[in-house]
Image (cartoon, rainbow, N blue to C red; front, side):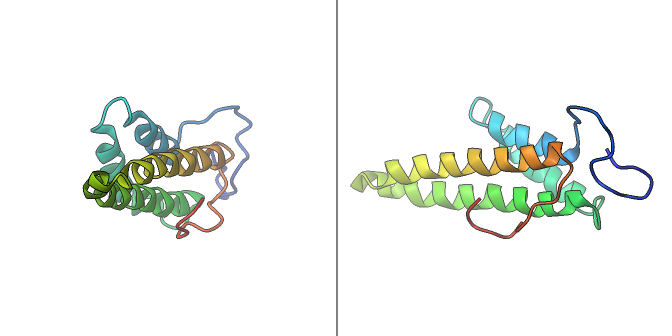
Length: 122
């Protein structure tokens, strides 16, 4: 967690459950329970105003963009499946979602901000 001065990484605990961690876990679990990705997106938008000015704000931007990038890639890949191009594109969308979620998850556990929350890659 953070100390009263707002400095990240001073808790000393091994694993902390914070808002970006919850959203990243919801995104990853959406492969088993499809609705959790949407729940993560809604929580990201709701919590975005609560974390303004903290290290978590960059995670919210990053995770919200992660959802929308994955969603757009998935929507594009479905009609392209008739041309067999959609299958690798859908796989790429799934890999992208997992990699970005894990990247955010690891940085959230260290309570570090995302270096470039508006990137399209990782």
